[in-house]
Length: 300
Image (cartoon, rainbow, N blue to C red; front, side, top):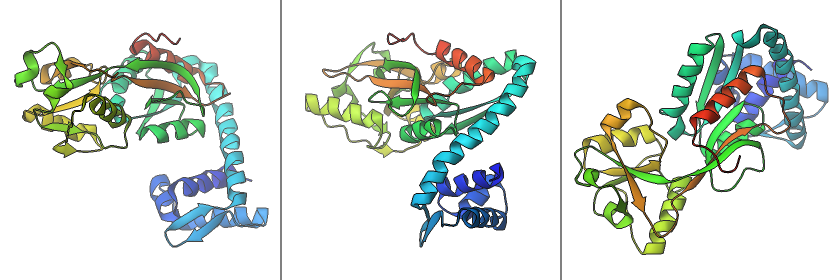
């Protein structure tokens, strides 16, 4: 059973169609179909249920997927151990994170790490919180940085802390001179927010309900980078965790306002790794750099 066939099989399992897997892998659909057909012939059973809207793993496919993840990780581990004979001159770090941390924080850590170890390569994926954890648990990402309302049970947690939510506005906003605002202040201005199925909205909506305050956003987007220009160029506000924007350029573009609330506006953040996996040296070194860039954790 070749690792190439297993890699193509897992791509189809994740993307749901051969066409989608072909686009992501940059491999001809016929090559992917042939490898999957060879696997099914070798195992003597179908690995997918072909449905009108895509391909879903069969029971046998589910079993093979669990095995395939381990096989590919073992193969990668051998390559990694050989590369580690050269120290931190070579290696790959695959990071999955929510968009909030991909705007400024993680790229900043990557930039500083690259200056010290220019031979290390990075892959950064931006995903919803649940998918970050899933990618790490399945070995498709080495590290995950994500928001969480409860500690992860599917991964090992290398770091966990709680971060307060703050409001963000333009420097000339009427509230920009305030050192502290309340939830009722937010309701008096246009607010741009992430959708309701995010951890931010879960925490914010509970706090507003506790105070009997209704905040109806005028702009909702699942892309934080789309919200920031709206806030910068209007009298609008948005909410995010306190460490999302750390660079000097961001400090000039926005004002950060702490929020007073009867109910906690804190969310948990986690740095996650695959359970029971020995991390490659490059990943371990970057993990240490990433944790050092985060606020000290009382849970460590």
